[in-house]
Length: 527
Image (tube, rainbow, N blue to C red):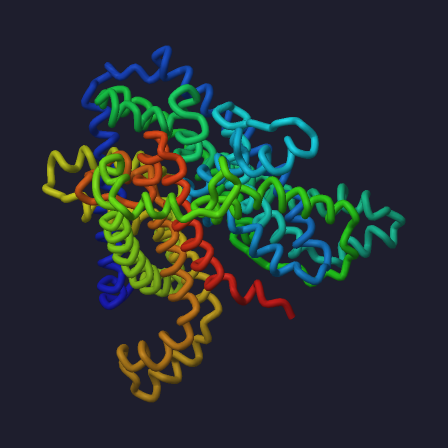
């Protein structure tokens, strides 16, 4: 690798070593300092570990069950609004976790939209899954089913039709063709989708904290409890080591499976297969039970559930200063600092991922590729724990910590976006510009920026949305002088100011919708 390449990679290397690897290494070192005195499986820790495995397995299975039909529809069938369906089905995964959890409360709560305006008036029954294991499973599954849809749908779309044609020539029915031809081909994708969903469910934080609470604490929530409530760093370290060991093992298996096919493929099949009858029932089911919480949260801040009427009362309370004591600061400060953190981290992700992905693609540096993607497997709560330990060695302020953490957790998304772009980049254009004597800055403004403008826009907005909704690390390191929207919404919810929490969640949800629409506009425009 040339000296120039080293210099281009240096800023990203500093970020990954200083803001990612170092905090994780400090956790391991801190754990070893106890010299065998860590009780990894005390009665409480053992219960938490067992429950985490149990709920993550059920949640990932449920996500697979509801995600596979969507994968089949976008991968194998043809219908007019396939692009819109595919794009809208991805909304849950890009939603801030606090908005998704509040949306469940708004829709499935005792006085929520589903019970108050549909089930009870029509059937005189109520469906109240909140604050239960089933509520956590539903929340995690609905939040992560787009992973199954994208991964398995991409695998189905890429199956060579010649295999099915050969099977049908040999007399195989459509059903047999699927089970004996397509299923074995896409099975690695199905396993990978399950593993990835399992990892996200295993490290779920906001959904479990809001829909389950301490009674249904997972490893992630219990680590937060140890750090912020009990100040028990010893047990926090023990659970963190258990979580890191298991998640890294799963991530390694996932990376092996990923090499066999395009896990991140979002290809939409051009198949002309007829849209099945069951597909209509599935779309209706998704529209009610999955999109219901999302879209109801977008209106909850303007709705009085007791009077069943439109209101601006909750927004007025939110911005009048009445809620400031419960937030710990002004709501205007929460919006201001959220924007500062989100914009700063998004700019860093956009710049660093575009440069590093170019060098890695050009030099085929697969080891660094894996390293730069690895933050996907690390929970923000774990990373924040590392920063608490780091504070004992280096003076670091809360705003710097937040920008660094938001950048690290968003970086893999930007890196994947630009990696795909550089793979398709017309190298002859670069070569021709070099032959004509164009320098780096000339190529940057005349070639790279115009061609990669969509990727730069997407990476910035994806990172911005992630930072806007991040809650785990922010709550672990929280400093009331620098409030954020997501933590403020949770503090309002936990202090039983639910209408105002829903109002703040509404603002966050609408902001996410706008970002999502900008990113996915090409898919939402049907041809």
